[in-house]
Image (cartoon, rainbow, N blue to C red; front, side):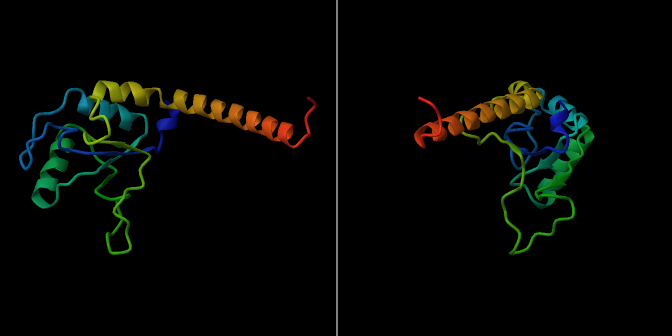
Length: 149
């Protein structure tokens, strides 16, 4: 899983890492912390991206820290980022893990299966793109009369 190095993964808290119980902290979701620890071990940069602010945010960060997860950043793109009117609200992340995804939250086991094959999926996608480009080049040659019929 070499391609997970420095991959920015934004992760929601309520309904994703823990069950919904806001403003309290809900029960830990099955395999959440095991998956997050493995992703970090593989070099992914985890960003906590949550609606929580103030004391509730601090409680969530501390809860995760006690479970062995130290986030690269919390509600920002990088640790030193200062939010002002020129800072976009949308994170610059490669992957978002959130219970509000289209289709809902698939569970941490499924997320691990998807991301542990990320490098293989990327390799396959690159192969497909190469094939498509070659096919497109051949079609353009054909249409422009450069290829033999």
